[in-house]
Length: 308
Image (cartoon, rainbow, N blue to C red):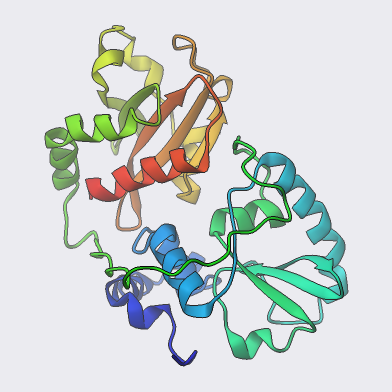
């Protein structure tokens, strides 16, 4: 299997959606690779890409980092940046992590053999856009369970079959009404999926007339609490956690105090964007009394993908 092929050959629907989005002329897209655009806009999920890339390239995966690990990696990364600034292949999508036994450990979205060979004694680790951002510059906001130590990685495992390319959803191919009809008809099954990980689950939609969130659905048990619906109204023009997800499109986790909420005994919240093409039209929110995990993120993201 030659390395002249890359993800575009295996996920054709995703790259077509990226090319369509690029025709919009959005200048914010120019500094990103097509792969990062595909992942950020959920034309391609990280889990599907990770399964394919780790097997295809035979590279380990750096994932499921807790806050302490991210802080440590960020410190080591910052100590290395200046010393490796002459290597032009390094950027926000391919970053130096640390040196180990004479080798430079590098984390990135995509393994490019030709570019990678320009780095001295380097070892590549596949890393999600979120973790790359957290390690390199973004303030730590996620509260993840300590799953494995910083030096641990997930070795690539053989996959049973080639992941099926995802159906790319564009704004021209689906209307906002379709999204909400889908959430309406499948609310019961979506709630059941969410409640396997969360103690409570709500769906918010963005009101385009005032750019504020409004409660759309909540799980059956939470419905019985007769909560004030205005608790879930957030102005997306102001600084708040929902605005962060609205702008960055990443699923994020927060202490519930950061949301200004007091609901039962919940302590943590996970927020995932519902996207119609490049546009965020709503949010899925899961609440827990205990710390959140990477599996919680994956669960909400899988529901948001099914919604569109």
